[in-house]
Length: 364
Image 1 (cartoon, helix red, strand yellow):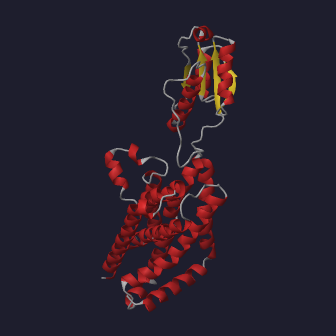
Image 2 (cartoon, one colour; image 1 turned 90 degrees about the vertical axis):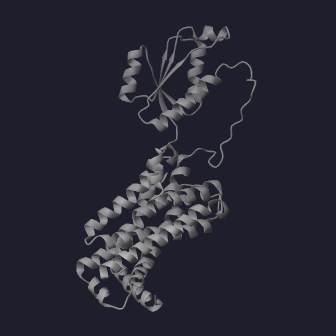
Image 3 (spheres, one colour; image 1 turned 60 degrees about the vertical axis):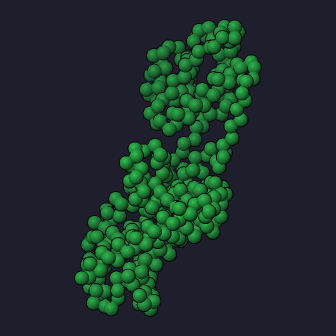
């Protein structure tokens, strides 16, 4: 490969990008829009959960239990009920997410030192939040009325995200998802546009090799994508106040590798299609959709069937999401995260080699 030819393609592509400022502006703004939307919309925090109470005992102790729920800060008392039918209706309507049912004799059981049964009905429509609501309710009930310390004292400590803010988990994952959404699409559309206009024939007739042409296409869009990740990371830390435990330079350095991975996917897509519509649809199918489902961004991979766990290894977003969360939340370094970095490098080289091979086949 000759550097002068690559620089010539870079210059040509840069001029094409500059001539279309609207596309560049959209490319830079859309990642921020996506970050704000998902950063605020996706939350697994349990806070202000609406609860209702059916108190058959109506004693000072039962009222104290309800007050304990409200004082925890996790629950808001929405209403009191007089029958089980009213409780069921409220849960069906979604008026409450937790219904606390205190049976008759609750205070008497506590006075005698006997177990006092209490029922907590949780709306399990959204299982992730329902599990947290049920766990908090059990902890509050179990701790109520304890007269003596248990024989074993458990001191639980949450590492890496002690505040349990879901945004601290969501935003580092978004770094990987957003970079998988837009760079492949921009790159794929850039080359298929030349195919549709016929200007690609000039490239075929020139002394440019496929590797030189694709490298010249890769670098400008890679730099745009790198600017995207810099903006997204800056907003994530400054606006959402996500703590950065590890090195920023390491995050940006590996982010640059990931950027060229995603842009390379766009190059490969462009060699497989001849129209912009087909390129756009294919890019969305093989990049954006898997990055949501199979990267570990929202759904833990270890909970998936084993076959799907193997399938997730085909998508680079998983490796960068793991790396990003490791650096941001755990303060891990290259010594701990080198497998993800190595896999991203290998993925980039393989994708670029496949794109060159497909492009050479088109030329032939």
